[in-house]
Length: 77
Image 1 (cartoon, rainbow, N blue to C red):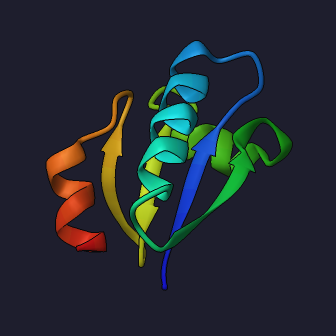
Image 2 (image 1 turned 30 degrees about the vertical axis):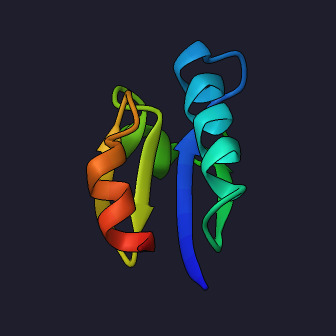
Image 3 (image 1 turned 135 degrees about the horizontal axis):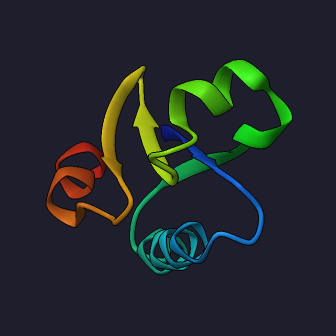
């Protein structure tokens, strides 16, 4: 099973949109997504705060702001 980390923050419309898109893709692909609120860690807020949401896989950025479905599907397919 592929594992992703989604860095984001509460009340972020881009974060909510990306989470919804991932939920749809989860219907046909086997993966997990761990949500990390960047506002709970000053180091993460500094690193990702201007780029949320940021989707990561094995330490590499898959996409930020919007889902890069092509890049995502290359990983889960």
